[in-house]
Image (tube, rainbow, N blue to C red; front, side):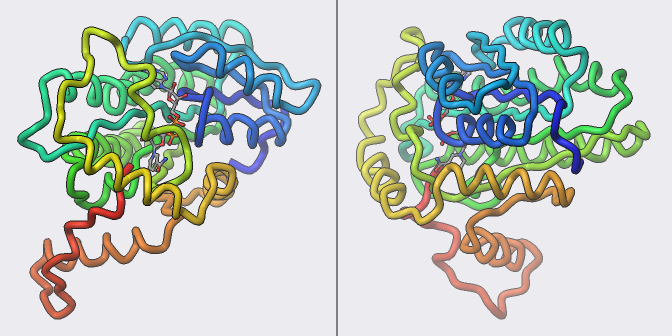
Amino acid sequence: MKQFEGRVAVVTGAASGIGRELAIACAERGMKLVLADVDVEGLSAVTEAMPGGIAVRTKHCDVSGFEAVQDLADLAFGEFGNVHLLFNNAGVAALGPVWSATPEDWKWVLGVNLLGVANGIRSFVPRMIAGGEDGHIVNTSSGAGLTAVAGSGIYCASKHAVVALSECLLKDLEIAGSKLRVNVLCPSLVRTAIADSDRHRPAHLASTNPDSAPFDRRVRAGMAASDLSAAEVASMTMQAICDDDFYILPHPAVRLRVEERLRNIIGDHRHHKPDNLVTTTDGP
Ligand SMILES: NC(=O)c1ccc[n+]([C@@H]2O[C@H](COP(=O)([O-])OP(=O)(O)OC[C@H]3O[C@@H](n4cnc5c(N)ncnc54)[C@H](O)[C@@H]3O)[C@@H](O)[C@H]2O)c1
């Protein structure tokens, strides 16, 4: 998709970080916007940061709930008639060794990171197909969706699932003869508020895992050292939509780790490095 002006973008998790910058990047390209998040105050702040004259609607929406995402789709199609870019971006992280993860950790992270994307696809894609125009579904996964990261078992499981879902969605759309395309965004660490994602965690799914703390410190240190901003990741994402690049890997280091993982999977040990699958300096 190369034409953005006057078209419609929906961004989940738009109040902060990568979602905020995706929303601003779409506004700078003259798109109409529907922004969703559980952080309503954050959505107001993003709206104020938009260039003037942009049509923006905001909505409280917990993407883990199917009906809430259906309501979001009703708002978007009701207000603007069609949707051309759907960014299933909202995400959270819970850290710690796999065996320390609580049932609440699993429910929260899979609810937001995986069901949030599934709910977005189910609520928007049939109507986008029916609209008959071109467009993209852009799912935010992670470098952790293509590799393994110590202390991030639930997060990696959720993000690997988002990559798989995106790959299947692309095939399903091709078989259906749709004009819609798919991208999956897989960044390594970016300076955002994700290390504080507990800030909007529902009380009934509260964290009780004491083993997350050391990994939390490592993720924060890695983020502080990250050399790509959320705005740069958003800009690369918009370019990938233009170029129809399915996999978006803003960090070159992720490419190397993917290559090593695939060599291990297919049994090509010529370049095998035993420790390459475990990195504690990486994360969300
Ligand atoms: N920051 C990184 O290092 C990094 C790396 C790879 C992938 N990601 C992914 O990028 C996406 C955006 O995260 P970010 O880094 O910008 O973090 P962030 O915390 O700055 O932004 C995430 C946004 O999602 C919102 N959110 C949380 N739960 C929600 C829910 N149930 N429903 C709707 N909105 C909800 C938050 O309120 C927040 O505004 C996530 O999917 C994350 O997993 C981040």
